[in-house]
Amino acid sequence: MSGFNRKFNPDWYVDYKTWLEYSVAKDALYCLPCYLFRSSVGKKGGGEAFISQGVKCWNRKKALDDHVGGPNSSHNVAARKGEDLLKQSQSISSVLIRQSDKAKSEYRTRLQASITTTKVLLRQGVSFRGHDESEFSENRGNFLEFLEVIANENPDVRSVVLENAPKNHQLTSPKIQKDIVRAIASLTTKEIIKDLGDAFFCILVDESRDVSTKEQMAVAIRYVDKKCCIIERFLGISHVTDTKATTLKKEIESMLGLHGLSLSRIKG
Image (cartoon, rainbow, N blue to C red; front, side, top):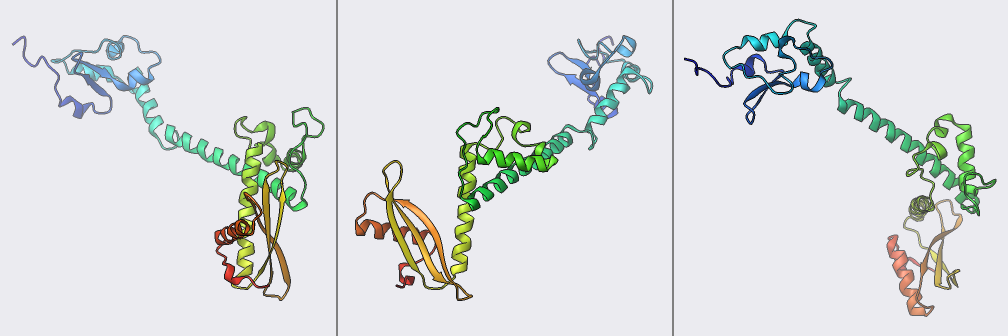
């Protein structure tokens, strides 16, 4: 009889399902809440044994009840900590979601400030960059200086831009500025094409060299809008290999096709 029931009883999982763990490798019982959330465990109820070496009480189920103890036992304190963690308001996932929502909100505010700054500079036709954009420069360029003005007028913006933004996510770098400019240019061109509609138009083409001596072709369109006003709008710039008529025609056709326009609609 000495060897009777000298092994783990799976039925115990039903009675102690909230905390009991069994290690096949060590053939021993453990308490998950005590292992994760213990503060002071003491010897009562075999507390330390249920955390470190494990318990082998195959014919003494009472040892499990003794470990649970009263309402304020070390085990129940640890169990309540585990329950609190799983509650919606205190769970790790909930904290991460709140942090993520906060980060998204700050990102949108930061991006909107950079977009607003870019729009103003584009409308005024002024340069973005400064000769010295260092922290202690008296004039850091139009982009950073105007962004500073926006921040000073709005505490919510101030709290997330410039020196208060993450060093690797300030949305003020030259690359970001160019990305925003390209996005605004794309939206502006779409509005021009929308305003043009199905009307006929003529084109104005000019060729010149940029600072790197590359040949470039600028294209503008002229049309009469629905109010019978003559409208002239810039369409785009394209680098060309040479200024031969066939090359320019090919580039013009390519640029118009990019915006859903056809050479057949050109008049004049």
